[in-house]
Image 1 (cartoon, rainbow, N blue to C red):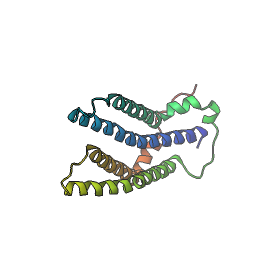
Image 2: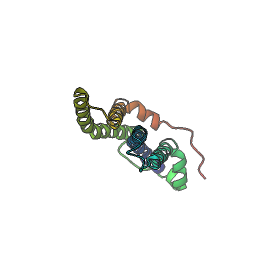
Image 3: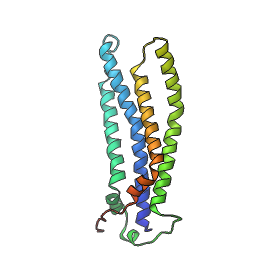
Image 4: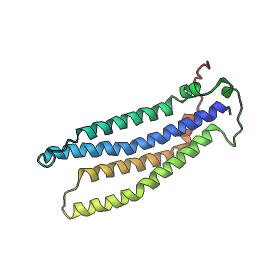
Length: 181
């Protein structure tokens, strides 16, 4: 494994981490969408407070993080070419394993962390949501959005765990190399 390969693996893992972070920022976007829709229903209470700037900022942050995560994950070779010196593409680094195994380990750890961070809040919110619905109380749009996003996070985490081998094959496959300048 070349030194530049280690940079590539590290950058791609960082990109995958940012992709998981983007799911969390989606919650913020949906929260402000819920506030904005509820403020239209109760215009008297929210007339003094405009939610639009918060919605715009949360959408901007979401889009920025998504673009950054996609760049780190799928344009890794371009980034490595810019940050590595020509000798990094020639120097051999000795690791205990190859790129595929490192990606697989990172995906399994990321999947487990995503599930473990999400599951307790999901169970707590689900119990509260079911109690409110059973008692005939109004369910908040925020709670529904939180439950949907929690299920999405758990599904993504489970997908990362179940498909870690095939995803690591995808990330580790050699793509057309860019010329070194």
